[in-house]
Length: 136
Image (cartoon, rainbow, N blue to C red):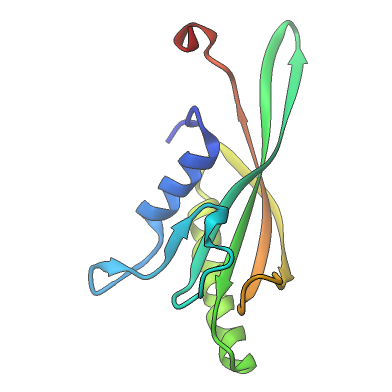
């Protein structure tokens, strides 16, 4: 897959298409930052755009998109939560790794105040351009 025009929406679509399914149904809930503040009943992947930077080299302009990806589970038992979260993170990494239009460097364990779950947060970088002609 080549780089989508909107990397955030492209990454959400990639997760929706490629994350494992269970009995033909999605095993993960995938969305934007709107998943925060909602109960985490199934493993959840949230994607939001953190920043955009304009880069000009050799008279060409590109945009560098910094996206955040949160992998969340709502399991309360710490031992079970660790196992479920580790599996969910590996599933997410298995989707990210072959995608040539993005790059990730590390995943940090974290906890968000507005969820009851456990989480990893990744920073993902995508490079894109603005098609000025199609925007007019």
